[in-house]
Structure formats: structure tokens, C-alpha cells
Length: 392
Image 1 (tube, rainbow, N blue to C red):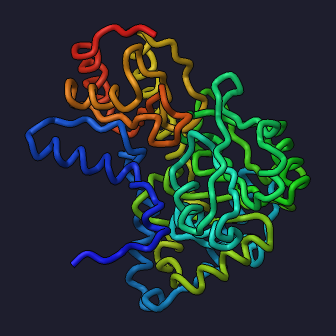
Image 2 (image 1 turned 90 degrees about the horizontal axis):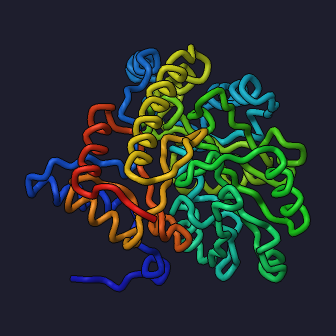
């Protein structure tokens, strides 16, 4: 029996990466050796001292009961300590930090705290699909801020009509950026803060990739910028920093009212993250950081291999300063979707079409560096032999 779906589900597009997983499974079932450069899921292991801490704490019966919905104070203190050491930002762990079951969970729930049906929400295009998807579930209407290469893939706030800005309550930003790999500096964040103050908009900054950076570049936190805490909240995660995507542990920090509202919503929805995972996360945040340098060096080598390989075939790409993604234009004669299909059918290589991140992603595709170096080298060889030199 098929049941009538709620309108909010009918309005929701299929999740991009769920579809990619289906395509990979279909090809593998047909015997194709698939190399997936689609989903940004680190292939390198979680640092051993974090795993050991989880093993110890999982055996402690005190951790087998319900956790706090807003997270252990000890974990929130560790997050505050991380922000102080890394960014020079002082946070009150009791009122300015809330524990998340992965930052995606918090990003998905935040719209329910502030958006009513019909409210416009400012969403980057291209952008992480959860910004728009979660807003649609809350009944809001995304207004897409176009990210253009000539602007460094930063939104131009002057392009947003005043009538939209006056009604908007929330704006999502994400730097270092997924999918483009673009970065933002203090001057841009200052513009965002001024815009948010003028129109009373809550800035939600997704900072999942601040620790994946190369060539001496150090991404900043939105909260480092004067005035940010008055208008904003920042989402962070251990997923990319410590190769912990499957662990589902993150945080939201910043504006006291927004942190409290998100914690209040979560208390009615979930029962918090397993305390043993929070204890292990503390070991990561407060422990040795040698693994970050080692992992980033591996990503740098892969970045150079992929960018140099594509450029040898006709692309003219600059090497991104941060994230483990390469964002590139599709060759002449292709759309984003048709180029992704051609690579999968001819070369057995999976990429994500730019349109999966929004209409402004047309003409681009994204490749992830989260595969072993040998497989990445094989992917480049397949593209060369099956697609050949390209033109634009």
C-alpha cells in the first residue's frame, strides 16, 4: 500500500549522494571497476589515540545511559579550548556551545528554530544540498545567492533584492567552500556581518573544512571577526579534521540565543550523542595534532597529481588552497550531467555534476581527493585514454 506523502516531502529533491551511491552499486553489480571521486569521505583512518579512547570509554557502564541532549560539559569545554587555541576565540562552554550528532544534523535542524512557512532563506548556489533541503523541510523558500568565479565564489550581497533581505531570517555560508574549494578572508566576513546586522539575519557558517588546507594557508573562523557573535553561529565537525565521518560528532558555537534554540529543539528530537564518542572526540581535540599535518600532506600530493593531470589534458585549473575537492569546468559539448555520465560509462570514474549543488553549478563538476593515490592515478589515466584531450 502506498501512502500519501506530506507536502514537505514532495517538495524535497532526492539527496545527491544517495543517488550517487545507487549508481556506484549498479555499476559494481554489473562488474565495473568503479573509481569514485564523488563523495567526500576520507579514506584515511581515524588517529589511533582517538580509537583507543573510544574503546576504553565504551567499556565504562557510566557511558551506557542516556547522554545530555546538549552534550557533555567536558566535551563542550574541549570545543571551547580548541577555539581558544586555534582561533583565539573565547567561548562559554555552557551557553555558547552545543554538541551535535555530526554538523549535518545541526545544519538540518537549525531552520526549524528560525524559519516559518514561506520565509525566504539565503542559500549559496552552488552549495551543500542540506542548506536548501533542510529549509524546504521547514517550509521556507530558498533564495539562491549565486557564487561566481569572477567573485572568487563569494556571494555579492548587493545582488540580493532589498525586499528579500528584509524578509529573510537566516543565511548560510560555507568557507572553505564545498563544492568550489574557495576560501574567504576577514574582509568578506565583515561584509556578511554588516549585511546581517542591517537586515536582522542569522548567519549560519559551516566551517567543516578549516583544518584541510595547504601551502601554509590557515583558514579563519567566522567568529574571529568583530561582530560575528552578535549575528552568527558556526558549525564545526571532527569528520574531516580527524577522519571521523562515521562517528557523527560535531558542534555549533556562537550566538547564545541561537545555540540555546538549537539545543532546545534537539532536546525534543534526539537524546544526544553517545558519551563514549564524546570522550573520544575530546581526545582528538586535546591530543596530538601530528596526524593533521600528515593527512594534509597526503591530500596536497593528491591535489597536485589531479590538477596537474587534468591540466595536461587541456584544463587550466588553479590548485585550491583548502578542502579536498577540485572544482572544474566541463569540456565543450557537455553539460554537467552528460560529462558525469560519460566518465562513468566510458571510464568507470564517478564525479559529482555541478548541478547537484544548485542551478549555478551547471557547467562544472567536482572531484574528491579521498581515494588512495594509486586509484587517483588510475582515474587520471582512464580519463586520458577514454575522454582524451579536451577543449573549452
